[in-house]
Length: 471
Ligand SMILES: [Zn+2]
Image 1 (tube, rainbow, N blue to C red):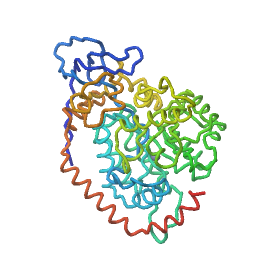
Image 2 (image 1 turned 180 degrees about the horizontal axis):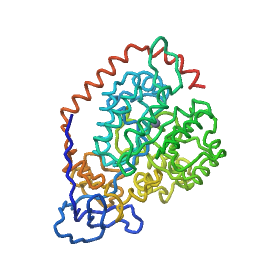
Image 3 (image 1 turned 90 degrees about the vertical axis):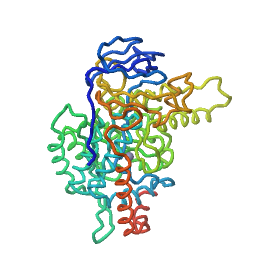
């Protein structure tokens, strides 16, 4: 076990950086100071004199709020690069139906621990973990432990989806079995404090594959358990079944601010209006949606309709776990869509980098109902912040700090990350992590999963899945 060592400073002054606050009242300070007192942002101003505060020199650096990732299956960390050329059909057959079945509790722990560290390393301070790796109660305990030991803020959404257990047959089942009762156990055992960094949530069985009545019961269970978030994959472009789940939930008055509706490119205008009225969240994961025929990312359309739109990473089994790539992809995919529809060359570009940076920070916080606490550098909010050094060859010089974050920076430019006023990354290094040793454990875990998975013939799974998915 890697022992965590974090230092809580009473007063910390981040001095002389370019402050991209995301607070409309503060805006961007070309040179400014941020004072942190304990777990809270105390002041943001062009110059702060704070006696006895520890000072971090932020000259040639950008200070910004932590990113908010509203959808991620954190457990997939050790399957990195396995899904490079996969369709959603491949992903269902291989990841969800085979690899997921061969995770041990230790694998679930490592996936979640290292996955959360990877997020923090890239300046993501809040994550919604849609955790459909509940092969046993021990898997749930270990997945929670992984997030908690990493020190990330967020919601652990207990996944009800049953990964196949491969006894006598490979026939699929959608019965959550022990998970319904186990979600209650996990809620009671691991989530006793409302003030903790990590909150309890629920991820119903795939809502596009189960009967509507089942989905309603599972959402009701989440509400009975006081789930902060209920995470559902919906309206997935070419794979959309046309069941109009969101419209039905809206008509039955079951949409609410606790729902995080993921992907959603096939949502109708009527459904987006219902989502906006109900205060439910939309999480668009641009890279998955573009790769896996889920339609054009809905984030901008939803945002402009007044819905609480946000961004998610989704999976690192086929791409990087940072928000920089997702922001860039969304921005340029949106510009591409709009430019392709023009009859003549545009004098100006309509969609702006600052809009996508907002979705990745304050927009995510708003979508999760947490914008009173996080999402911007605002006095009184929790100190979740990122210092991005602009010293490396990809970030010298910087004429536009928003452009630097959205179109140029990467995770290795992130120098310092605070969550709730605690250092989780400092001087470019994760705090209290022996990375070479951890990397070796992760490699061994990956090897075990892949070896065990060879027992199941993919063709047999594909035969069962094709009539269900490729209609
Ligand atoms: Zn997902």
